[in-house]
Image (cartoon, rainbow, N blue to C red):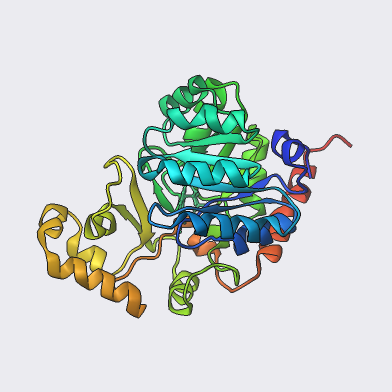
Amino acid sequence: MPRTWLTERFELQVPLVGAPMAGVSDGRLAGAVSAAGALGMFGVPPSVPVSWIEEQAAIAAASGRPYGIGLLAWGLSDEHLKAVLRVRPALVSVSFGDYAPYVEPLRAAGITVAVQAGTTEEAVQAERTGVDAVVARGGEGGGHGRDDVATLPLLQTVLDAVRVPVLAAGGIATARGLAAVLAAGAEGGWAGTAFLGCTETTLPPEGLRRVLDAGETGTAYGRVFDVAQGLPWPPEYGGRALRNAFYDRWRDREDELARDEQARAGLEAARQGRDFDTAYVYAGQAVGTVTRERDAADVVAGFAAADELLSRFAAP
Ligand SMILES: Cc1cc2nc3c(=O)[nH]c(=O)nc-3n(C[C@H](O)[C@H](O)[C@H](O)COP(=O)(O)O)c2cc1C
């Protein structure tokens, strides 16, 4: 594989980050991705106790390889920040909200800090804040972020606009996607959806089935699920999830949904009862490439074939 800032910084075999996915990637998936030669991350939901962060960090660290933790700036508490500083992962991403106060304390602890940016302006702002790397994240990506620009146009302008290393996220799910962004000048890919079919996620089997059955047009972007849960996501960061009956029913009626206690309670009941006609599975457009259950090592090995694609252009 080509050596890049990402592979050198974390001694990786594959220039790839397994993206943090709150509620889906915990220490087990992160550790499995790292053990396979990429950099695995787990995502921290704002609602978890501090002990959860410590437990998952210990599981991820058991791989003996560097791993990362993804934080949501809008929901980050002092206790969570302190726990992350204590367990000291190699990489922290802190995105979506006012992340600036956290950059210096994390860097001072020797942690590499990245921010996910959904516009070129956000990427430039992140660089000014002193982050080590920017993740150019296009709107086709799974989970939360902006839906303003797609990965390829965003990556091109961000690469020209900042000097810090740039990782590319949104729709990168196979060796082909990874080869494309490396050829463009990214230091690596940042992939979430590609790992949704993994045996190591916390998705229940019913959710996994929806992932495997969904095609590239099977996702939708919006705030329906956040509003239904009363989560204080900044409104510019909606989420991309598998489109389902609950989404179709409430799309463009979010104000009404916010007042509908019954609908909100129904979502929570569906989540517990694993009824994914109502409950959400966050996923990006690349879900169409996820067609069978595999372990994380197999997914990382698949990405490593980017090397062959790139070698087509090597000098003879
Ligand atoms: C199920 C799921 C949960 C996510 N949770 C988080 C999160 O907790 N923190 C975060 O920074 N990004 C989160 N993301 C976004 C990813 O970090 C990344 O931007 C995205 O997965 C990239 O696009 P892709 O899904 O097409 O690979 C999540 C994505 C998914 C699919």
